[in-house]
Length: 122
Image (tube, rainbow, N blue to C red; front, side, top):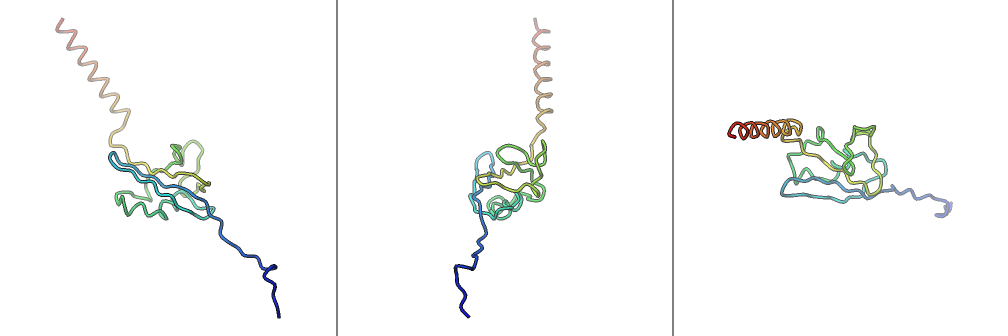
């Protein structure tokens, strides 16, 4: 029996190009990779192998975003649900060293103290 190749459908997994990014104060890395359509942000991070360069990344706990939009906030799906679009860049955020609100409060208190000291000398 002869089967025409014209009648056979060649199914090829469609892929999209995305980037995974991580940065330290003195070093950054952006990895471009092709992933299958339907890949989630967390899956792309795992597929990128970025943890080999930055073993301190805890992929399961890391906060992630797409172009500065934090996943899992403001109505966006979390990293395990967000399906990447072509040209998305998954950003892996480092934990904060200090709470910005606390830093501002401390700085304001120090400024008040300096003004108070300056006023008491005059």
